[in-house]
Amino acid sequence: MKTTLDCLPCFARQAAEVVTMSVDDPARREALLRRLLREIAGTDWQGSPPEMAQRLHRIIRRETGIPDPYRRVKDEMNRAALDLLPRLRDHLARQPDPREAAVRLAIGGNLLDAGAKTQIGAEDLPRHLETIWPRPLRGRVDDLFRAAEQARCILYLADNAGEIVFDRVLIEVLPAERITVFVRGAPVINDATMDDAVTAGLPEVAPVLDNGSDAPGTVLADCSPAFREWFDRADLVIAKGQGNYETLSDVPKRIFFLFTVKCPVVAAHIGEPVGSLVVKERLAHE
Amino acid sequence: MKTTLDCLPCFARQAAEVVTMSVDDPARREALLRRLLREIAGTDWQGSPPEMAQRLHRIIRRETGIPDPYRRVKDEMNRAALDLLPRLRDHLARQPDPREAAVRLAIGGNLLDAGAKTQIGAEDLPRHLETIWPRPLRGRVDDLFRAAEQARCILYLADNAGEIVFDRVLIEVLPAERITVFVRGAPVINDATMDDAVTAGLPEVAPVLDNGSDAPGTVLADCSPAFREWFDRADLVIAKGQGNYETLSDVPKRIFFLFTVKCPVVAAHIGEPVGSLVVKERLAHE
Image (cartoon, rainbow over all chains, first blue to last red; front, side, top):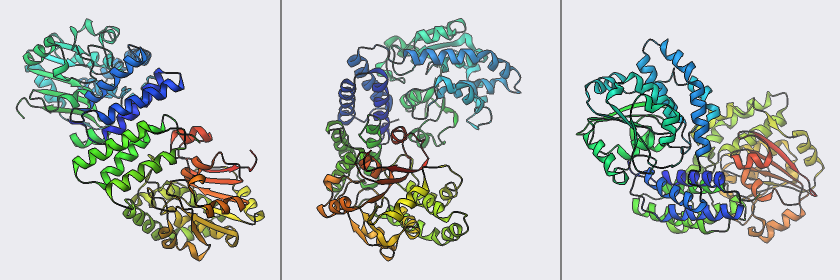
């Protein structure tokens, strides 16, 4: 999915938010935001939105000297999700279709996205999760589980901190023994890295590796050769989050994208309104 | 009121919206948006937000060769407001306090703002107007009418097309014989100019002049000498809309600002939440 003109203001918003969060001195704030706006104005717009975000967040980390500006935010999101987990497991166990409920939870957790305009913070999580049960779930959950039953090698591409706690719940109802989870290779926005996977207890249910990249999505050319080998070998990819959709939607591969639609650009691309919980299948030869 | 870092993404959004609206060719769209983003990144941020908007919209008009990109939008807004007017007048006549109701209507119409993020289009006007009656109205309506009764020379600074139709309703319950209405001196966003005042029938109730400026607010230094003389001489100013608030909030003058709070930056500045209907008095010697 390519960057559109409507993505540009969103980059500016992200830039202003992270600058405000990471820099205290007003003059340094202004200088860094100017630097980022010039980058937005001057860079190639042909790539996917996460490629632009990757560039901006690299500049932010370099200029501020803060290697992981969202560390506190991620810790809060993990903590909020872990606190809710026992209650959610009870809730799931009582559902007529616990697998569909696990999918809802994994997708609903995707709104813990510090990069999106439509985002929730850790403090909003309990209230937000109540809204995910009655919402329409677009796409075929049965097809996802059928594909997972038939696949020999499944990659599960995680997205954000906090959300990754709910990924564990979904992985537990999938054939976990054939799943390898991938997180980002380095901090970017609130995307989950290995630390978050460990906090979520994910290595207890499936092996977790990192993709070697600091893009808030899966930019194959930027991932490690080891990841690309895994990706080629896998016969099914489960990709969480808008960032993974934006970077992989044109890749010829059997992928199930699981995410909450968080912006009008993605909504138009996928044909579902903002706020939708989506299970979107992509065939290997589309 | 000064521009804040949070205003910058909003300028980028305005730029993307107007470029999409005014330019069809993708390459020209991209070039113009890059030009505007560079302008945002490079310009002095010390002024008020409408001063930045003025710069951007001048570039847009010059580069596109379209002297009034929002003309169609303004016509639609005027039409929608005029269509609703008879029903609204009936509604007002039945209110226990028709003056307060007229203030509500004039402020509620202020959401017809093509520059704001929280905006409504002409098609949303009927549904939107239903929401303005039960909402809390912040500020003292009685003080406004008392000040108007005592003033000898009142300036009424209009804001947007469409909205200006409802300004007429308010002016009719004010001492119209001592009011002079001012509109913008040239097209900018959907701000009302003389054409809109005439369409709204405003000259039938009070003289209408223009302020000589193409800023979407009242930047005194940019207004005509004639306007500045009127402004100095007036003993009361009624200023509609956020743009007039953003540009006049620090000017030592007796001003009643009437507007809908449409963004978090103004909300923080005035201490009222987004969506509030506000009557904010500024004393001459604050």
